[in-house]
Image (cartoon, rainbow, N blue to C red; front, side, top):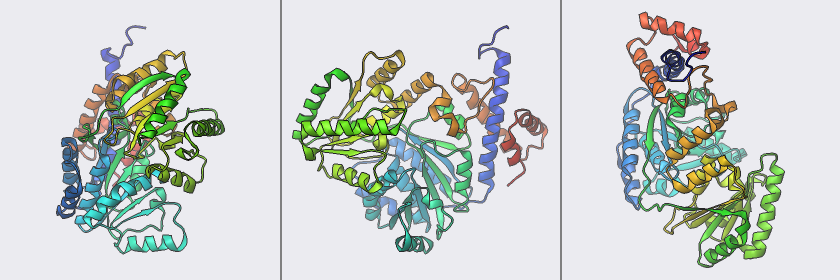
Length: 487
């Protein structure tokens, strides 16, 4: 058979061809987007200054750098197509708001789209006070808006009265019209492939596009999935965020954990209790959550414990969350609906029951829900011994580091790329020879080669361009072939 290792030169050469074909497809999508005339959107800085004045702390270096990149892209007449990725708690929301304000300062509008209703409301709560400080009119549009109320919101959008819109995918319905949409921000979590991004771009015919991810993405995956985008990374935590202390606790010590909660609540702290993930069915998930809820109420007091789970009507879920946010309940028992974006600064304890059943990225996200306030926070990973080898590696990785980028790399090593994003909706290429995880440096080379080739020969008509066309045809990159000469 000979040497088949990824480092074998012949194999590396073939791998490079695969990567190049893939990166050419993405670069073609990118240059097609950039050829569509965008508009130069240049802020005056007036609104941004008001928000900065209202903030209790100065932005981090990473935030300032990302903002400079975004502002430069928006000022360019070509369309922005940028990915903002940052770790849990790195302050993406602030960057998003400043970008939206640039659009408003330039006389236009901005939209921020979240994958779920809970998250859209969260953004509204987070951005509301800051938008108010800037004197900007902000509104929310979700599937819940019906009839006259919805019609009034749509009218305010169309007239330009509403300057920033936060919403779920309801903002894409055909009857939603903007007076002058300059910037679309998608809070993404892997739910949008390249195709959906192109769709979104059509709404504000020439709107700039910023995609934010809630979890850090390993470099090789970022290249494979977002190679058509320019990337900004937030890799610093804002000042004042204390690291979360993480401990592994065997399920047998449940009573100690409950005692600890009792003391914490007496001192005015709050806690999340996340119930185990049961793959087979939501009903088991539900019964385990309701069971835990009953036991904690018996132990801690009737009115001290709240419950949220996926099958509750949205109104009840919001009400339970609101009670917890106001501090009326001390402990919130939840299935993973709280995973992303929920912000309760006073919550300083995160208990994850059945931690061995969660993936690394999920655990990291959940842990990121605490450590947002002034109190030192703790995350307790409750597990059922004996731990399998993989589960043990996941839990110890989490105990040892809170660097989301490092965690993402370990996750990729352990699970492989397809699993990490769920191959069904990943839109990730299936390479035959190339190994995305081990050869990410080679993929980076292919990306810069593809971009250079298209910069020198946008229509692929030169000698190298023709060779590239043949390569795309050989590699069956039909989508790329469709992109050539269009636009």
